[in-house]
Image (cartoon, rainbow, N blue to C red):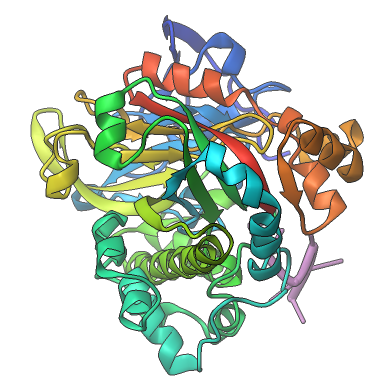
Amino acid sequence: MHHHGAPPLDLVQAGPYEFRLERLGAMRVPGVVFASRELLPEGGDEALRQVADVATLPGIVVASYAMPDVHWGYGFPIGGVAATDVDDGGVVSPGGVGFDISCGVRLLAADLDAAALRRVMRPLMDGLGRVIPRGAGRGAVWQVSGRRQLEAVLAGGSRYAVEQGHGGERDLMRCEDAGAVADADPEQVSARAMERGLGQVGSLGGGNHFLEVQRVDEVPDEAAAAAFGLRPGQVCVMIHCGSRGLGHQICTDHVRAMEAAMPRYGIEVPDRQLACAPVASPEGRAYLGAMAAAANYGRANRQLLAEAARRIFADAAGATLDLVYDVSHNLAKLETHRVDGADRRLCVHRKGATLALPPGHPGLPEDLRASGQPVLIPGTMGTSSWVLTGVPGGRAFHSTCHGAGRRLSRHQAIRTVGGKELRARLESRGIAVRGASWRGLAEETPDAYKDVSAVVEAAEGAGLCRRVARLTPLGVVKG
DNA sequence: ATGTCC
């Protein structure tokens, strides 16, 4: 294998929720893993090896970080954070963002308590099951008219969707980057990626993606919860999805282009899945332009799905859904951070990690300034999800975890339970299930994941964030 | 994650 002969990993505990991978061999910086011992990846050192491999990237600063939900991924670990210095040969790597560019979470709060939902739960779930496209292929809630309109989606994100009548102006105030990043470059999106994306705006996809009806269960921080528009007992809708075939194709295209370009820049990496190019190079800029286009596509996707959910909630429950927040956990962003006493322009890769700005940060809109940035953590369909917020200190470039973190492979997961049995188990606990495939459901069994509450406890313990509210599932529409 | 391999 490609790691044959690599030096052993030197993992030392540096605190109750912090482990350190000492700099060895080609590592330019140490690795830092925020986790309890119980949450460290099981089954060998593959994810930790990836943390060390990322530490070899040109221009990386401070450390290669891993969040408590870290697990093995393509090149970079999922749950990884790495920042490179743009003005010092720093690289951007598509593997540091992932195949599902702009995968993220949108949370909406209903003007309804869970007690009032009981009598309409059946028609509500039937309605959501009917209108939410999910699984491979299977259509979308918005028929984009053609290439020109898709380019407008790539440039305008949620903002364009709202301009087209899919939502209200208030939605945009509660989207990261106000619904769209400005530096999208549709020219860098291949014809094939466009084709794949054309019919998928407003579709969940598969894997760990879902739309859940949830109840606000436990509220560790009532002030922040109130600022976010959440109260105990309230009904919520959480949507977890990404940029579908479009983002996947962009990742594939640009990994290939960077693999070809790396020799020209004299870049060598320990794993070909870490293909990268300098941020300032034509290949680096091309990827970032295409990535930003996919970022906007993912946001428009979540905007359209939210509108579909709103129509069902209005019809079945006479309830409205207000946007709490929309945030991506698979992106690279150009940000300024203080490194060794100087402000540096960094390319911060967050792959299965979430930006968590602290209270008072100038990057936050006025109404979230006092509470900090909402962080949305999709858990599992049998346990819970969480709302967190940023804290002062800014560790790991203001990042925290993104989910429960996979513990068993999909193959291992389907050996533990069948889809029908899992659905029966969930329904017997009062959780309504509308799936796409029995196999897909079984692959997502809660047993395949780490304990999400332990993950967010570790993230808080490590000084990355603060817990605001726990959300428990009432019904799940599963991709 | 993904028209789950062009």
